[in-house]
Amino acid sequence: MSAAWAAVEQARRIVVKVGSSLIIAEDGAPDSAWLESLAADIHALRGGGRQVVVVSSGAVAIGRRALGRRGALRLDQKQAASAVGQARLIDAWARAFAPFGVTVGQALLTLDDTRRRRRYLNARATLNALLEEGVAPIVNENDTVATSEIRYGDNDRLAAHAAELVTAEALVILSDVDGLYAADPAAHPDAEFLAEVDDIDASIEAMAGGASKPDGDGAGGMATKVAAAKIARVAGCATVIAKGVASPLSRLKENARATLFRADGKPEAARKTWIRNLQGSGGEIRIDAGAVAALKSGASLLPVGVAAVDGGFQLGDVVVVRGPAGEAVAKGLASFDASDLRLMAGRSSEEVARILGYRRRDAVIDRDDLVLIG
Ligand code: GLU
Image 1: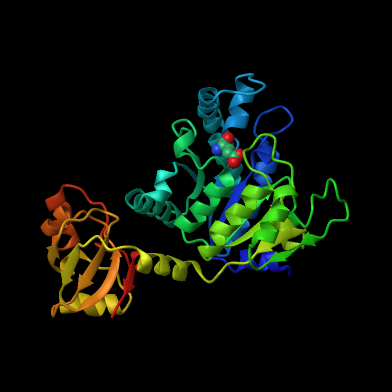
Image 2 (image 1 turned 30 degrees about the horizontal axis):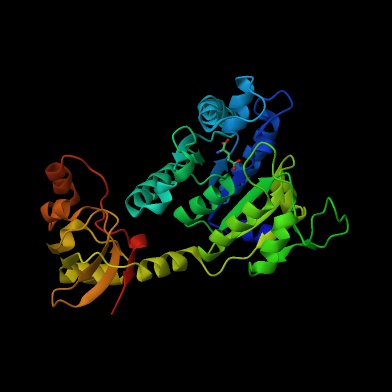
């Protein structure tokens, strides 16, 4: 078994990114046969208890063809094309997964959804809920509203941030290249192929600079793929770059050529390190002895265990959690604003829903958003 396939097979959560050039058939419509071959592969992966998020490009490429637009487009024209293409793209994915009984859900993200903690937590919660429902989330950038200053710009990086968002262990980037070469294979046919990369240093980045022509329909090239692998690596996620042939994951399993960028540690550990290093908001939550014991055994913090709330903070801010004697117990990302939390303190989840008038999340700090201290 190749190291690349082993990294995918051992992962619990996997992000599969599909480039625009793979999505489009000769006639400019989505390539339904190819999409179905990938859906079959993803269905097989999910069968092993794994959860898969798809990041799909192609909205602009499909939309511009539907509108009969050739040549360079202005930003607003691209955004309009994406509005037309995204509807067709999600329809194509829904059809591709239908034979396997898999329901798809569309998630359109903007850069702020991974950059601002409040939105980050909301996007993560939604993607988690979709995965728990057994849905295959199909993610793209919200090109219709994202303008140049607030864009990821290319879906390779978007996919890496999505992998970080859902704490995936593997990111598979499918495109028209089969991996990383030491030099541009078009100019140097005998350039060395790199099957495994441990560290992404300047020499690797230099190889990426000349190793591939940019995908004609998409925004990325090898450089953005290596940039994505670098983002994923520090988030504890391995990246595989493989060619988007028919049944690409089956081919990978059968030892097709691909490059594996190894992860630095595990995603959960990377996430905890990230939280540990975040600056506190000054807000504090005092909890009772029962909640201290619960947190120490790995549980989330629930409203019923909250004794008092100090300071002002908002959803996504970093708060310190203290036990009955004032001892620091944990640090984490608050799932509620301080003002709501004051109303919720000491109450059951049902009472909280009644008091707030809505039910958002049960945990005050989710176990995934919490690190123990002291
Ligand atoms: N989000 C763009 C689209 O769906 C693609 C960006 C990219 O190719 O990386 O058309």
